[in-house]
Amino acid sequence: MRIAGKRPDALSDEDLAIFENEGADILTPSIPGTAEPYTLESLPDRGSFEEEATRHVAFARRNGHPLCFALIAFDQLDDQNDTAAHDEALREATARWREVLRAEDLLGRWGHDEFAIVLPNCPTVSAVQLCWRLREETPKERSFSAGLVSYHGSEGFDDLVSRADDCLGQAVAKGRDRTVAEGLVDLD
Picture (cartoon, rainbow, N blue to C red):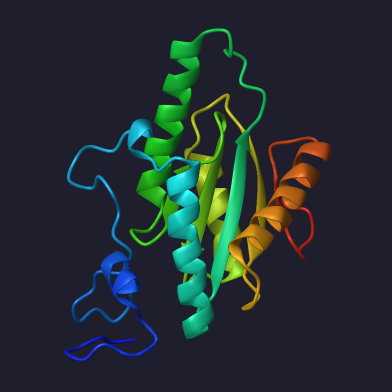
């Protein structure tokens, strides 16, 4: 979709503020903090992430674009009593992930050891491959479980979260260190 001169009726001023794209062929959301070095602390917290993710879902609904959503939880970090080492492991993992994720992907902090990712314009097969690449970039001796779902075109963001959480629960129950993608066979 190209936006030039006149704004299409489907996009509100709020949408345009998020999807800054003068003349871009693919809308790319703005990424907070790109002028500064990437840090774990620069990730959106859960509330900010939910606001931005809801906008991504609304945009996908209006334009019929594919979208995937993943919840990622680190598996049994062994240094939980050492807060500095624990946080450093999370920093290293998310910094490496940022190198894998596209500019339009939204990564946010969901809980202390949990993260969420919105993958706009991303079909399920590509999202599964992305989870594999994230796993490869996760520091050695670290692992995570992931629940991955695809947007069906009519549900709200809360529905995506619920379905992804169910998939994440299945991944943990099946032994951790794996991705469960809704509708696909077990991916470990």
